Each structure stands twice: as structure tokens, then as C-alpha cells.
Image (cartoon, rainbow, N blue to C red; front, side, top):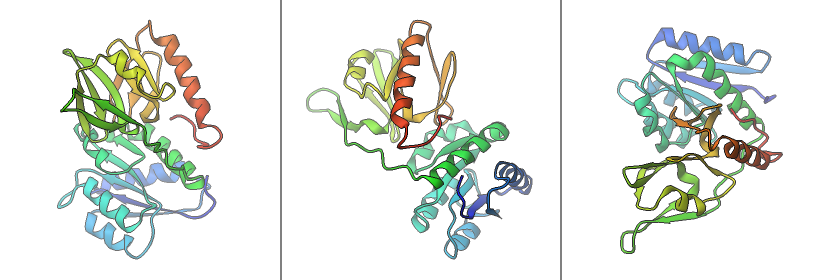
Length: 252
């Protein structure tokens, strides 16, 4: 955990929600020097951020006048080191948040269990900043004359449906005519793993690895079939081995 004072901004237009978030943060950060400032509007938070740095911001997505995603973009422009945790009552926003760098997307109904985990992750990154993970590796998909190149690091997961493999990326869905297995063979074998005949995941975007499902960033649940379970476990262990000791973070 960081030893310096951790400055946190919380923004939500509901006073009751702000109080609940503050209580969760106080419990999670017991014994850690920190300050919390609460705001009910994006403009008030931005005015404060212009005068003082924030290391962490917990932002509601649905705000009056300016949504939390736009707020996060403007906040990071002011304070590039600020980490973002999004709060929302609507899972439909899970794709939109990829327009801005963030460490967690937390549904309000799951806030009691998931917000403390996200805050712990933010503290770990604050203490030991993660080096950029971009490697420049690209995946080319599509036929001649209509092919596109996609950074492998931007792929969340792959899904095979209706004779098309859909690459779910930070920027949205990209269709590919290739079958799942040939595409997977062209991806990083440590970071990508097939979990089901119709799905393959990218480990850096996994929030929870369970016995029968994997939950991705944004809350999407990917099935793990019985036939793939052993291979998924081996892949997980191989991936975790690459995180030590450079990243110094536990899997959520």
C-alpha cells in the first residue's frame, strides 16, 4: 500500500450513494493515509482537480450535464496520473468505458464486494506503477482488399457465432471470417486462451477466474467447458508466472 497520502475524488449526483462510497473507501483504506473529496457534479470536480492532484477518482457514469466517461477523459487530461474506477447501475455502459483508461467497471449492485477489490488494485499500482504493456504485436484479419490490423493488446475476447469470429476489442467488435482456432494460433499463446469451442479470452482483461466461467472487464461472463478446463488452468498458471515480479499485482 502507498505510504504517501492518497487523494481520492468521488463524483455522484446522489448524496446517499456518495456517503456509501465514502464508507467503503474508509473501511478499505483503514490505516492508509488518505483524503476523500466528494462532488455532486463534473464541473465541481474539474475545478478542484485544476487546483490539486487526485491519484484516484471513483466516478458515476450517468451524471447530469456531463457523463462520467467524458469527465474521466477531461480529468486525466488535467491529471494524467489519476486512476479511474467507474460506477454504474447499467451494464450497457461496459463497452463505452473503453474510450478512456480505467482500472475497474463496478456495477452499483455489486459495489460492496467489488469496489474494495478495485481500490486495492489502485493502491498497488500507485505504490508500484505498472509499465506500459504495449508490444506492438498486430493481428491481421479479413480478406485481401478489406483486411484490417488490430493490436493484440486491444482484444478483450473472441467469440465464434453464426460462421463469424467476433473480436471484442477496446474499440468495439470486429468480425473475422476465420474460425476461432486458426485465429487463436496467431495470437500470443501465453496471454490468450480458449475456454470453450466458441470463446477465447485475453487474460489481462480477466477480472475473475471461476470454475465454470471467466468474468471479463465490464462484467461479461465467458463459459469454461469441461473439455477446456484443464487447459485453462495451465494457461492461467503460465500467465500469472509472467506477472511476477515485474507487475507485483494479484489477479482480482
